[in-house]
Image (spheres, rainbow, N blue to C red):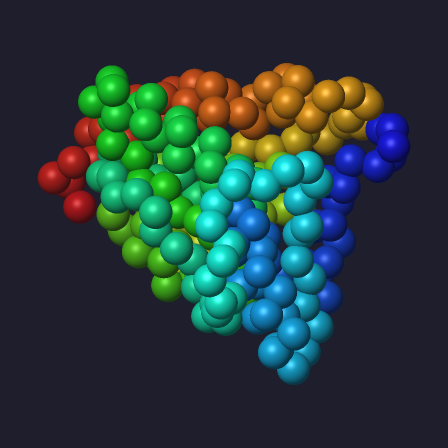
Amino acid sequence: DGPTHHGLLDIAYLRGYPNIVLMAPKDEAEMRDMMLTAIDHPGPAAIRYPRGNGFGVDISGKPEKIEIGKAEVLREGDDIAILAYGSMVNPSLEAAGSLAKEGIEAMVINARYAKPIDEKLIGRLAETHRVIVTVEEAYLAGGFGSAVIETLELLGLQDTVKIVRMGVPDRIVTHGDAKLLLAKYGLDADGIYQKAKEAAADAVSSKGRR
């Protein structure tokens, strides 16, 4: 372990590999589904395997394949959209609950795939929301948020929505307790809540405009 062993580079260096499928589960049940999906897929695939304990969700059922490139909307909301990848899904849901107490309704999406990304959903979000917050436990440079921006440009929608990217900045991350490091970089529920609340100041006025 140490500063060189945080596992923050994989999205950036794997995303450029032709025809690869990149996925990250929100919990241990989805991890099983993604393993089955990867085994059945005829091409290269990589799963972001999170370190630590699961959330204790039920895994007694039979795993099912997940449609490749298909995100999952977990919570509806008109004020702001939070597009979370892998381990950032559950803290994003918690942050959305805190936002709701202040009258800010956040849509929360489990991105599932960094490649191929859900272009259809991202295009719809650009048309229905003024701000999209992307959240990833990885370096921002070349990461999931970058993939979202590239997708918007490909769709010709880069000027229709504001993107706020949350992730690890361009610096070496020190060794330490994971919870403390996530809090340091604003990647816990409170940090996501604070950043989304700031972004929502520009998003609340979108009600009824689109």
